[in-house]
Image 1 (spheres, one colour):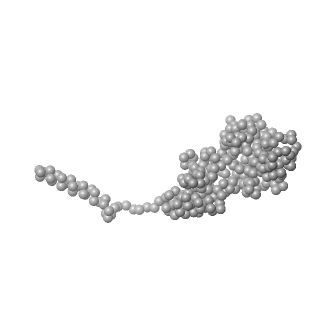
Image 2: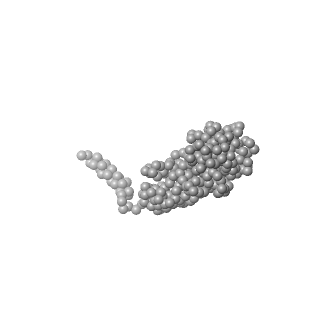
Image 3: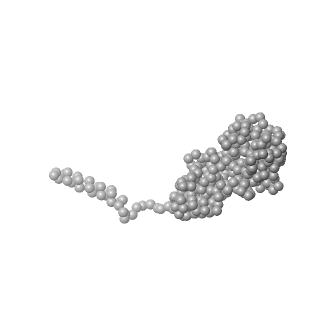
Length: 304
């Protein structure tokens, strides 16, 4: 072989070794290690930032936990949900979810109580509900709930929180706070349960949409026909006045309080027991776009 060719090969090998060897194990590299700033654990009352794909998806019991969203203090910006409860758990994802489920903290109940409702004999009521009311109303909100786990990086750093996150059922972002909405607050439109037609329907929509009625509460009257319709209507009217925050729940005749009964019948003695009733409110002349829960003296949210 030509000596010049051999010399060239030897030079190439030497050059390659010079480039590769510094990267081999045991060789000291220049640089300074630094720690990563991890977010604080979520607290009750924190908001979930973002919308769309970043929202936690409610899993069936057997599904993996939803990805952890970004939590931050609520500051008036649009948010995707709120933290209604926090428990502690360790282990893998499934074990943590099982521990959350067995913690004694019900995420749905915590979310309704977070909104300002109180649990009373299996139903959710406002704090100023009359104890002698002939109708045992049950209030609710248009929500989804999920237990959310820390991201893998946070779990590896020893974080043990599991957060109960409540979001609107539609999954959209919203303005305002669910916290205390039924206790001197105002319900964000997306948490209201409304219908597009002029009668209660199972095809409900968010109250942020154009609608012709909003659910206030439901009830199952144990003694059915023994309760007069006039008493049921009066009870519904008083409830709506408390929910809206006005002494006149009709706002001077611009809204109407409705119950799912025929008002010209004095008694419902022949109806099955118990009697199921819906208490709702509807606009008189123009569609709404917004909830009336906590409306108080603000203008009626008519659709444009």
